[in-house]
Length: 178
Image (cartoon, rainbow, N blue to C red; front, side, top):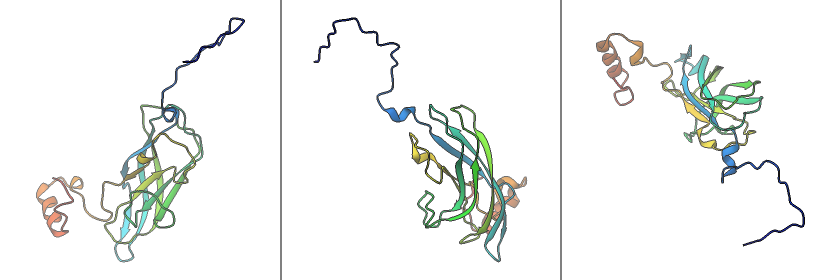
């Protein structure tokens, strides 16, 4: 116990309570809902072109500064993280606006072009791929496309019989959910 006494009354001004964990005061980029909007796959060359859209939200308590880079990539080593020396970048976006703490997601778009290892590979998007923003949680910066590039998707078909036949023809019984 420490007792402080002063000869004169001390005015400490306004006191603010802060969380015990100061990381909670940081921004927190959360990436989700990567969509293969207008992505075309060349099955002969294993290349993709088009763009992906995704949602990003700042779950933290302070704004994310402008200039954050978002990268669409092929996760070549299946680590679930963007590693520029290993993974293949397919496109990038430098977002020049601050991202305020919010309950609403911002939808962003990245143009993609490049080769992929195989036709059905996924595209992932990494927020803050240059790792310049100090965040409260770095583990929620990457989201994957809920799709297989170049493959037909159940939701693309109104006729479930056609969807089931395509599912069997492409051997995707375990990957596609009816």
